[in-house]
Image (cartoon, rainbow, N blue to C red; front, side, top):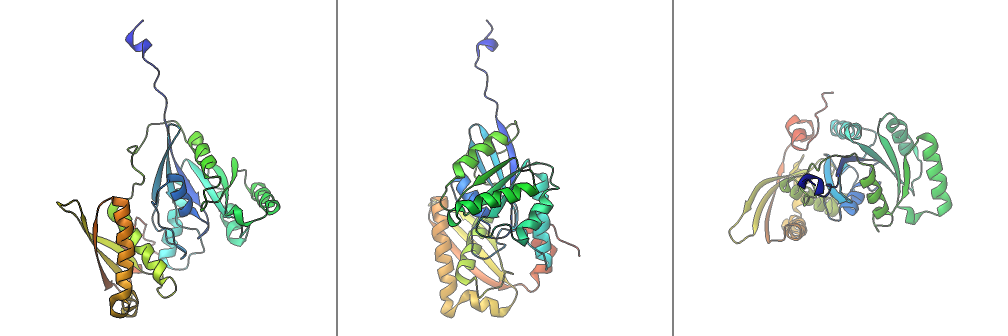
Length: 308
């Protein structure tokens, strides 16, 4: 018997991209974090917080599942809105599988119906995921699942609560079985392909929304300017928060700088937890007028700049 014949057969791996499609605030980011088991995308009460296709990466049963957390799909009005919606649909068409998330409490409303009509043109297998099922009676859930499946032939239907984790393990296991055979595309210990500088900016942006979601308009962004790993193992991070008007800058700073200090403390605490080392975070606030019309800003966020 040859050495080659006696060697055990190597287990075949599977790997694929799974796009999460749904309306804003349906729970896509929360589901990515639940599937991965760590915080890789920001979760906020303010709609449209996920701008670029930040991916979470899951290893399950010899399969690598690369989750594409697309921006929530809504009726675009501004240039930034159009860029985000275009990115969401490109994510769906480029993936191997598509998970369509519906808010079980909201049901098959006009927004959800429009998404189902459009996702019908995506040529991959589609999975229906009803989220927030703990808030809805079972009879309503079954009726919603039937109505959605009557519109589109979903390969499978799942009823979950991304927040509590109910049903998430079953969904993860099924995704691992449905992604195509192939080698892993990322190192096994990697949870996201977003660089740490970008993730750090996302975390600070989340803290801004949590603190100022009513006072501050959506047009604000955060950039990580410096990332220095120091000899004592700590990390020094400098970030700039960009707003469009001086009045917004004053809101972010707060009276006597109290608001920016609170945002910085929350962000620093979470970054230190993720990195496992002390973090020295310095935040600056600058006015950048009409940044929503600047093509360079879109490229930095991983979005195509809509010309119209």
